Length: 271
Figure (tube, rainbow, N blue to C red):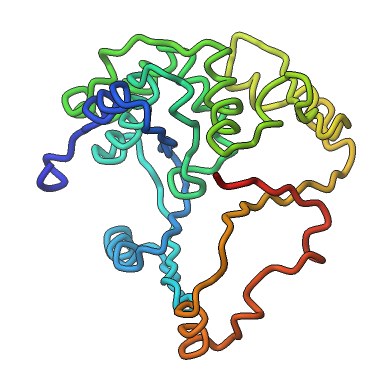
């Protein structure tokens, strides 16, 4: 659209492009109604959001890199723009045909906290759940989006793909996201009920590296995780080192992370 009044979804066009071009993947950044914390390096937009909402605004300049702004925000069902934003995410999930190329996120914390994933899963698995919430939103949503015309429902298999298998594959984590030989024993076990949101909100067991760390929704054991980093190859250019020398308040040699801070690390090769 040209302004807030004409704001509308372009999700069908985006989904159509992704369906026709295998080189594209996307994470959705699904909006969840309720409290959120917008956090971005787009300082001018955060100032606009501060003026728009009247909420508190925190802004900080990160040395030589960017500016960072934080503004609390509430996504409201009856707000037309917010409701369209919510519908756009679901349109993408439901119109993109290949679940291996679309990933479940809420752009945490911008569009909603990650602990609302079970809620999003319930919308994807139940057309009835979507329709119930759609009926509570601004009536303009049905005109500005195609969500009300979509009846697709995700299977458990597809949920496993968009939340685990596909993301692991996209990131090159070969030992994650599957139950094959040699895979890391990182497993979440749920008791499936008719209420999908409740089912995925409380894991029966969470297993990390073969050890039970959560039992019946409660922490059973502490676990030291791993730090993943990408070996991109190559060395920093003289130009970058010169910029550090001229403009930064810290030395270039202080910028890298030393080995002692990585007690458990796993290197991802960049091809």
